[in-house]
Length: 86
Image 1 (spheres, rainbow, N blue to C red):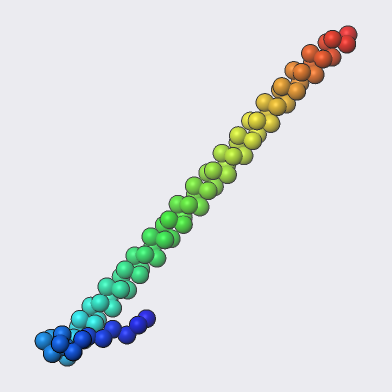
Image 2 (spheres, rainbow, N blue to C red; image 1 turned 90 degrees about the vertical axis):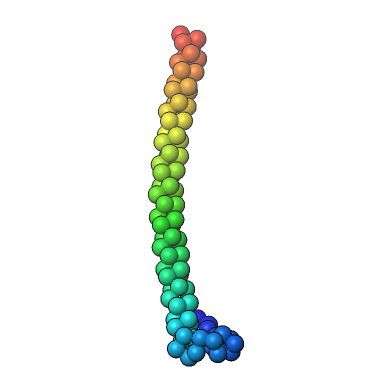
């Protein structure tokens, strides 16, 4: 983390104690913002993981249904072809 410096004109107006308090205030605000950002990123990552799992399940479900449809179509075609041989 970079060191915060209070410009000399501001330090003259606020004094040493006020300048140190200002630096502490900005450091605390930065810490709070970083924690908030980390929490938001974690929440988004968890949501993305859930959505990704749901999408994988949907893809598997539709692949299975497509396979069943293909099997039914092939069975019907073979049934029609074999009827013609009898």
